[in-house]
Length: 212
Image (cartoon, rainbow, N blue to C red; front, side, top):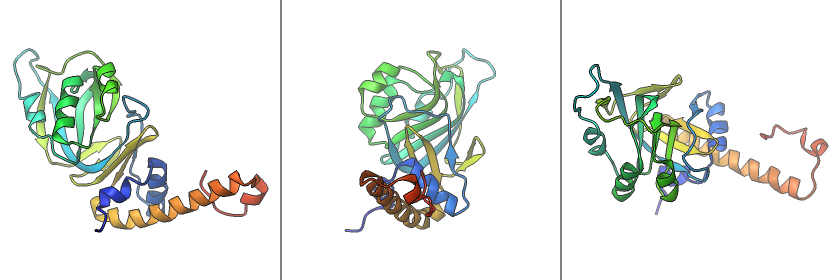
């Protein structure tokens, strides 16, 4: 059985994918969105959502259920428009997402309940932690539309690869080509590792165009 494109990308860390993107002149790297726990990783196609702050905080909005009703199996939910000082995600949301088979969460904004998220298995990447709730402060404005996060465009169905080093976005239409390049990049990286393990020095390696 042929592997799915997400299975292929699950073989790579973000550094390998970033190097592959460089070879295709694509800037898909988002920094400053660390995982809630250092060992968390996620790979999947993006399901995008944009929030806005409400003009009159205190009234009930469509959040959180407009968000929770968009949990999709094997997808990475990518959220923009929250702001770093307000949380749109916490421990119970992670439990619901895990039960729904969601691949992971990437938030350009705040999240909370860090100890609970770390105890669980659901990966969450966000700008920073804050205890301030988004309920009655946030509203879901758009679902399934392109987002711009730190100058990187995230379209629905783009491939998301995230780990402790960063978040990488691979345009859907380039996913197969970039995967082939990433496979070659990984082979080269493993070759360099073996050379170093067997005693290679800087002088031995510097004649080749290796990534470090």
